[in-house]
Length: 439
Image (tube, rainbow, N blue to C red; front, side, top):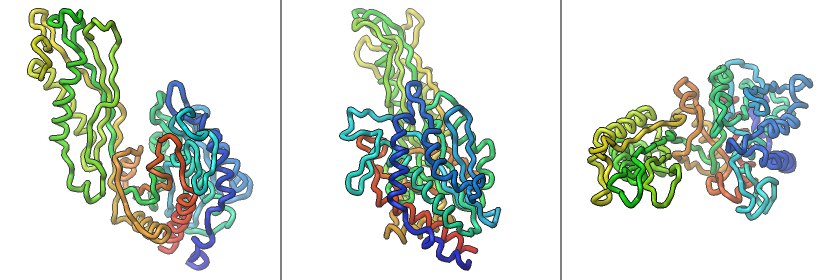
């Protein structure tokens, strides 16, 4: 490979002052990229603007090597696609998935300001340091160094910073739309690293997600005459238990979960409960439960949806057989011709992924992690990532990695360690170097 034999040496180490300067600007925008519609709608262009401020001087428009493209499906929320071109148009290594929004933060619950970067020893503190603005700054610095050194690579290096569709009331603006519109078509010629996990080790498995919503319909009546009511709250409690028990019977712990080091098997649980309101002396006639299924990637999300719908249909047909809570707590009123019933619906389905542990992409990541971190301890979680399963099923070598901390992920007092991000830079440089050595 000639002069490219020491690609990782030429790329060197993460420049601390430059990295922290950029990250400080990104965290300074975190208040305005919180994602919790309808109240908090992120404007990722605020983050993207700082990235462009660093990289635009090295763009092709300004005589540099970087091809920079912004793709927006709604105002103020643009994806950034940045390519450092190699000489072989068929070969590429891509770093995708670092999103430019953050989860909300309540300053009153933090011991430091979540919306400005503060430093305590090795800790870089603020909302987005671990998830995921720390990665945005890291990959920006990597691209800047590539452009400055003008390395002659065979493989193109592509980075995609994304807009999140999660929680959004506006559909068709996220990374899935980029995929549908063909922006991933030329990324199949090499490993695709999804940079949105944590703990500096390969994340070799993620979970699928099935948001579910169950509405129970009873019959509202005065609490002094419970024999004339169908209590929707009690119906919800008594119906949910057999649904969960049947789920765990049909989707038990899978043998491959141990091989992939999942901490938990597939789970189904409620996370929200609501009803329309009323007086304390009214037995409610309606109740809503919501929750999710977290599914290990060895089961199909569509099979689970079919099963849960089947559980609900069975309960509706046999609601009188549910366990109840006393002599006048029941779910049918034959004289009135009334029966309690359930309605179920689902949110967006996301499939999990079990990464290919025999692929070139994983072996390169393994070697780089061993070289930089000193040990390799892959893990899996039932957290979910968008699009990764679709990519894998369409022939992409998808691997997932990240250098924040699970312990502070989405948490109050979020921070990452600078040393971990600096190691991440070295791992990425080693990946690029190893792939060049394939020639």
